[in-house]
Length: 444
Image (tube, rainbow, N blue to C red; front, side, top):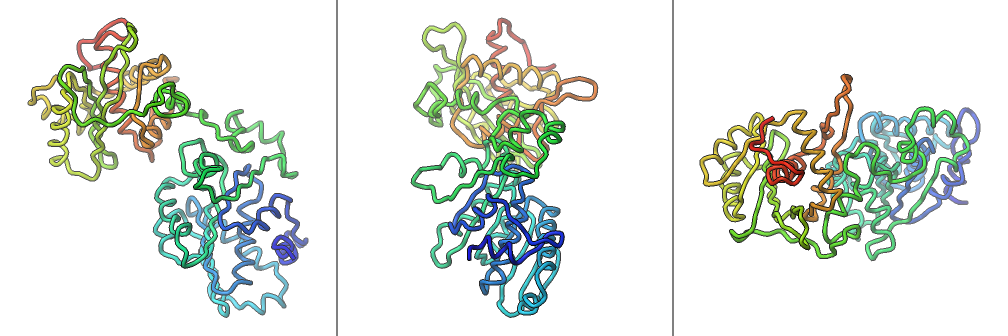
């Protein structure tokens, strides 16, 4: 008897014997150690994973099963599935499996030692339990998905205990570990995953007419058609970013740029510095202005990026000053807003042409527009860096109730690299007449 048949015979829904969809049967009958599914919303995967976890906990002694969700509400919902399913099991079976713990987050069997935990997103949680089975629900939407993935890796690499890892999610763009696993490592030497794909049309109970009334076409493609849509809200599509990054498949320049520690004085270098606030890093970026193939318009090539994290201000300043001197910077633009005022004043004491920029809505709109135009014309080349890609791509354009455009990152996302780059590119391009005029200073 297959696992799907056990589940169907074990549980009931609304007093009727449970009947799984074909794609649910395929999932639970897949014995692979590493499974991943790209699924439409409302296809019942959280539910079937809860059912699978409960059956294993009952039938395989000393199982330790983790159900990890994006937040507290998701974790409680998954455990509710466990509780609801448990109550539908015939009494003569339940009597054979006395329960020791029955709470919103834990479900323990007394005699066989099996345990189920349903917990919110926490890398420490995954590390803290000797889990035999790990389910990550809506993995593409985890805020700290890289830390979570680092915590999961021992489950793949350690051989002392065979563990199963299951990743379940609807797509959420291309800048996350879920996309990399499902698409980028497919058929490579690192690929150990059994993949499942469930389009909304495979579920007979989804009402297409109602869905399309509530979603934009792009959102519908991502939420229900399982597409890794990249431009739902992003100002800078990933394809454009990669075209401006030598060494990537999308770029015409196949040779990757390398970080440089110093630059001769005969080269023209511009810098942008965004001073870290409470949760951001201080970022300094350096671009060289060059003319390629007798082009009348300059190209700005990224030569270096310094990311100063978890450092106090007094420790950052010597590194920033040394970077500006070793790179022989011609001009530097600094975010002078708020805490940046102190950095601006300190750098003015150095023998460097430093300009303070007051961030305002109008300046941000100008800077973003400049950057987009320069990238579209192929006049920018970035270093290859995942965090840089992420911050460029996560910039969103929102319309205020007054009808004004506002460019910003989500409050939980970092934006320091983006604005350091914007400072250097926008101000250098205008200062040097890239768009047909020059500016005498950066204040708006």
